[in-house]
Image (cartoon, rainbow, N blue to C red):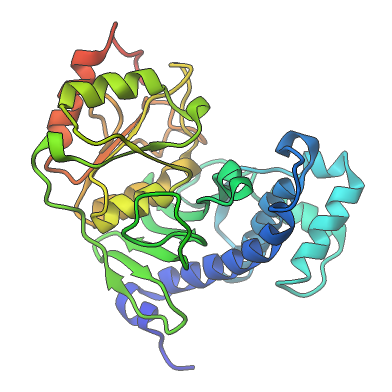
Length: 337
């Protein structure tokens, strides 16, 4: 078989991860047609949950095939499905759209592969990052990362609805963002497999910065956001967006700053929420830390327990953002551990 562009430029593991995420995005697009017409909430065992579980099972199956010795750490487990056999059957039906027929018990076992703990080498997966964005017809993502000795080596983010360079919820044709440590960050937006290099912006004046923030107010402290934006003198209102699609936008240079203030303040991000996206921004030339300037510590467990919140920038603006956060704090941030 001829070597693909991704294999030649990024290596075999990254190429396999890209294809895995591309297949998962295709499945998500198929499932989303049902999700978009359904008003059930995720807590009520909606098709959104079917999308989460179906994508996780598919990626777990591909990782089992291609990287059988690697651990998988993912957002979902199969306990909900075991309590709802009809939902488990629906997930199995979805899997048949993308893979060979699987028995329900096999599907449950694949999903539960994601219950692993960090080891020397493992994959971190958020099968549907931005479920509410999916339901709203806005942005969502499939995020997969390979970590070795606590360091993110490969990050792949499938963005089914993103128009690269458009920092809004406007729907686009979608694509795959990929980063390999030491080999840069790239975007593949068509079926040819072509890769376009991603580079952060060169913006140096905080007042002109384009700021990204979570769409859902429950996901980050909007009051802190306003205080920091005001302290920086930013002239434009923040753009609101779901999922790690935001990281791809910063990596492309279409936005300059991405902020996440935990609510409650004791909340700690899961590693699958940041692993792929953080590498993407760093390899595009940006900088990623927590709110007090510490690098993200992916060796602390399933959550970033030694970090608090997120600051991701084009690098040039990073110190100014950290200073604005320090000035805006009503009291010291809690320690990361």
